[in-house]
Image 1 (cartoon, rainbow, N blue to C red):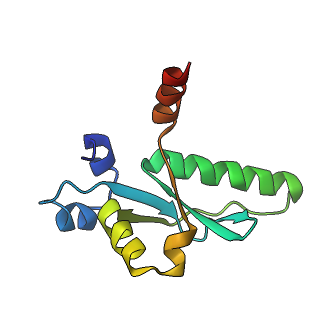
Image 2: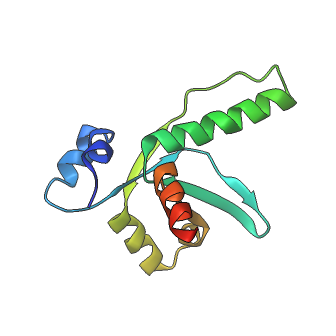
Length: 115
């Protein structure tokens, strides 16, 4: 089930649509994708802040390569775990390109468990 922080960071329309379900929001930045050996990877984040931080890192890297590039305000799209499950079940191409990114806290906690 989604945390209160996750729910608050979603648009009101998402909250209304998912008000009676234990669905978990997933955040992505429109047009943000990472190159992979066999195509593109579309990152989906469980925390809005992590999506924005990833976008900012990418913008900073681009700016170092080309200082004349202007930063743009990202367009955040919100989906959900159940919507992704439906996409996966349909077998669409986009479903194969999606990669889930947990919160940094979850990654750090997992790292502690492995020690």
